[in-house]
Length: 183
Image 1: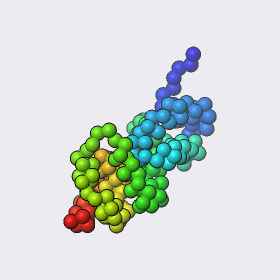
Image 2: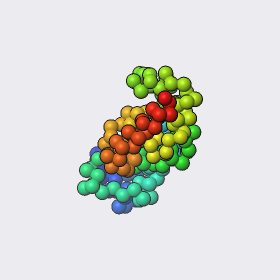
Image 3: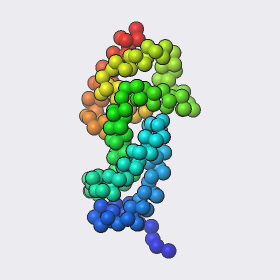
Image 4: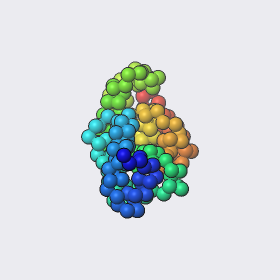
């Protein structure tokens, strides 16, 4: 029986040597976890599956570079960052209507009702949908990350690739615009 290789050993073997066995082991180890985690952020199962596949393709092709010193030897965090960026890119390409449908689908499929969901449920859906559609894409992305997905400012900043201060400013602008549109 062979010893289980560490994540760092697997990633070095994949990125440096193109070791298919190491890649398959890495995929078996992290694909189910990454898929489950991505599905908490996106209700579109097909899109999540595509994002996970593209994440591992980026690792295999070497377009995503593993640097153990820069990644802090955290393979899961590194894979999550690649996948979350790809998901944001995919959602940006899906258009405002697609994002709104996904956000509403996530709200419908949660077991526990959050304070934001209770407020949103009290607003007439047509008005909310129109107000969300009229927001600039960068403001919608911040709202999705912080309100719908429940990320902290720092987590949203990492996901969106912008500074935390920009997340705060965009969230404030988006909320102000929504209040004005729904008043």
